[in-house]
Image (cartoon, rainbow, N blue to C red):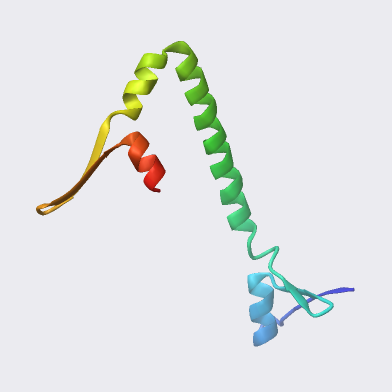
Length: 96
């Protein structure tokens, strides 16, 4: 049995707050399915971007493997005053 928390138009305290964040209770378990809907949409978009980047990289390496390899050996540095960190892109990808 699933019950939805509902508040009144004039305000319903905790019940109204629960309705606003999309909280639902089922057998004492709180589900935030509705509250996390924007996060799910973000995950779907980020997955699509990652897939597009992977397909682009596969096509690029098939067309011109040398230039693809050169990009990975490009140096990227971060400098703050006199302190600096410089690695090639392959090095940064293994650090993260």
